[in-house]
Image (tube, rainbow over all chains, first blue to last red; front, side):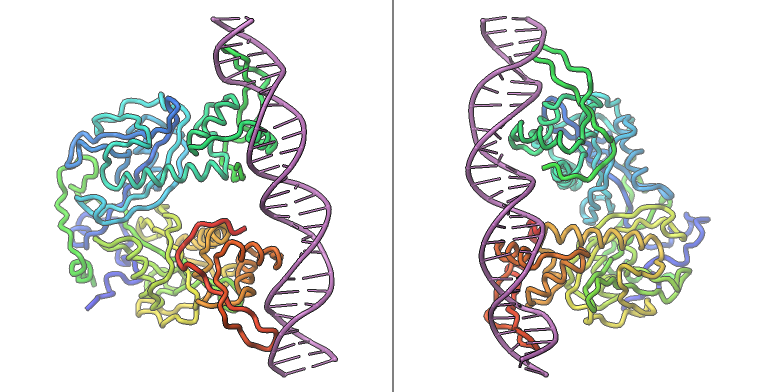
Length: 244
Length: 244
DNA sequence: CCAAAAGTGTTGGCTCTACACCCATGA
DNA sequence: TCATGGGTGTAGAGCCAACACTTTTGG
């Protein structure tokens, strides 16, 4: 009943040259497509927010979704995610991390599209450019009150937030959400905000400073009150460290 | 040699390419394909081993690889992984968990195939059937001394072992690697084996038993020496618990 | 009675948590 | 001088790690 011939080795063996893709695909069995989608997160107005875009055209054109699109032949997954993210936001050089791959055939009503979900973080949510023409608009939404989302993007949002929460506890990932230089109060507020629980200031400060993650800068922030010491991360690359 | 019977019979999806500019399929340009590959792990002869298969045909036919293959249209990713795993081993009902998605266009020299990597665990490595005809043979290898692997499967193996190690520390995932009923010594040996470090028996036993993860059975194991109490897991479903 | 694996408690050090007041500045 | 947010220390509890001998059985 089942012919194994098609997939000897589980992979198409007769396709060694991408020379004549058109004619070949015409006769070939339909295959799922590959897309990437990126949950872009940032702190804005004291809230954890996600960036959503609205498609200009198509069946789902009035629904919000995360920026994403099909992966091209010869393209790395992360490269595709960066390309689509830049197209939607103008951002380059963001922190990017693979979340999970969503393959439910019904997640896209039009076709079977397997989507590799990414999480992206930016420190400065204001530095978003107008989206490219394929999108009608883009906007930041508080993650706790997202509008109805296209595809399975609500689930993706959950994965993103969960990953960020847990990674805050065992890595220095927070450096992606803070400016180069910040006060300790900002750092602590970030943790309280995203983990959604109060943190004892004295214990937290003692522990964090003891682990040598931050560098105290000579300058101070002058404002309406007692000046705050300024800090910056010693290493702006991902380190796995128990934070809490 | 191309027979689409499998695909078409399985779940035909009319791909009519709606005029959507975002995820456009209109020209049927070449797209990356989607595969799944599964790192199957088990404890055998007191070692952590992975199951590898050798392809019967194709360019890579003398290289070892993890069981896997292309995802069909309309198929869930995990479903595809189970199908390929059963085809290679006869096993059903294994524990399966998504690891990571590997998308390097050069990972498969023949075509751009994005592969969703899974980790599978079995308690009884002896219960492996002869692989289906597409494979020449299958064998268990110690994970520390794997033979040269096809594709990027060496990397996948690393992801699998790393995931297993870390998940042993914060979940009850071990129930997938032990029989229904076991002695505490077996349980502890599993941890020492996979984490590759000695564990203090008294501290470990006290902590584990205190967290109520295991149920002590009335019977005892009789052998050449002092009989050992038998235990079994209270819940044989994944629980996130700090174990170490 | 011997070999081999199973089973068991205590102590000291360290870490974590709880908790409240003074400080520096600009307005 | 006052309002506001920045900055600091201590003590008690609980947890964790280190550590070695006794028990039970089969041969």
